[in-house]
Length: 84
Image (tube, rainbow, N blue to C red; front, side, top):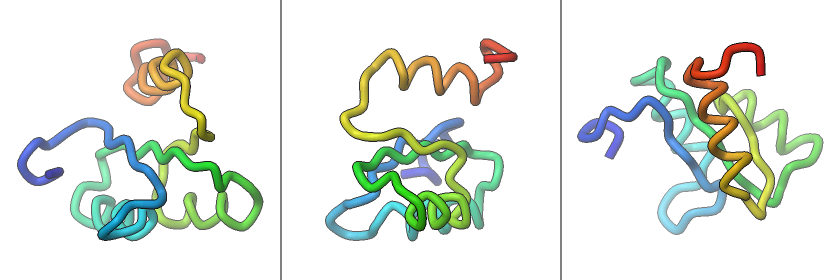
């Protein structure tokens, strides 16, 4: 989908049926390092956060994900509201 849509931001779940979010993020970042990846997960502690960073995740958000937090986070990543 990334190849077809060429998004600026990918919203990624960590637990998916075919490929986990860490693997998908690594693949995206290898080919498109300029695409931002936001991962949302209920697994937001210690070692897992480090794994997200190592995979190239730009931002981790905890579940449940609220829309306001998502919008503010995307604006921040895209530079719509510098200094947030």
